[in-house]
Image (cartoon, rainbow, N blue to C red; front, top):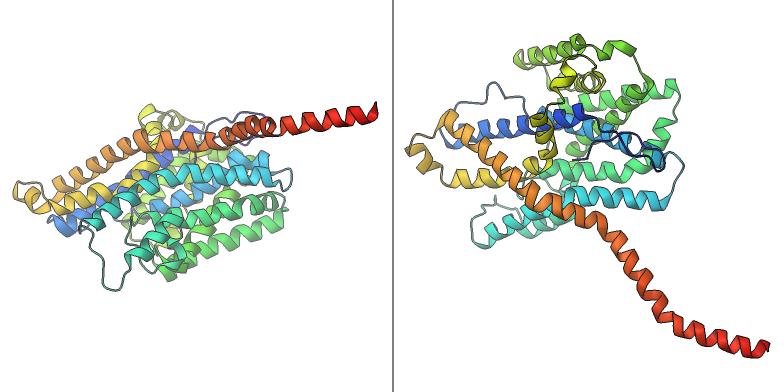
Length: 386
């Protein structure tokens, strides 16, 4: 999940948007608690998810957030026309951000498969699943995902990254009418997908779910920069109103498509807020949760697999229902912290530094190889000239 920073001009450091870091952390925790509730219901005698039963919609918020954040960070770098060097650096940065933790979880699944601890449904090829996981192509090519289910959204978002450097400069230059038409089209597409697909996490409908929401986030950023509706979005009442409307919609069983339409408003109200809630969204625990959110999200299925395997023992000792749900959520949180510190951060930093390291090695090696030849030829030229 992308680091949060401000729109950049050349050579200017970005300003972080802490509200979005916190919002991302809340969304990741919501997904984990939703999955924990679902797991407790299936293997530990818990009831159907109630309070968190629409937690899967937090993934849709992720897509809007990603489009917003990446536009915020790269707008200045990509606004000066197509530059393959900048595009290459952008894609490498995204690869370094999402791939290490995903690869680590895939490796755990491979180990489980080798020891016969990974059950696959009939007709599912582990080899096909592994190739798709390693290349981040689960979406749209697999009908179901057996290696780390949550990675579907990472796969879908990778396609958005490939399109982003080419589409965003065009989107940011659209006039008002074209922008309004694009907003309407993307929101309509997102709503239709919710109605037709029903929260699809594989196949083409999953991709159709992710892309409109991601580029919807790009347009939310444009509205944020333009100051659309001005001071209204800065008020606590606006943020509380949007949040309350979403909660009512959750409990009243409004269609998912209508709730998705509220996500851009939630994003805009959170990032624009200048009231007392701004300080709540800037508190250290929420920002920390946002920092580890990607590792928490991508790793959650591993502790869930372990708890599923030992669920008979846990339920026999009283860890069933809500207790099992809490244990699952806490285990996922602990695993996410561990992966963030030992895998995600070190690998990300190493990969981000790799191009500079390779360039340095080439710069040191190439001249030394050709220096003698160059010196000899220059001597010959000097002799001929004399």
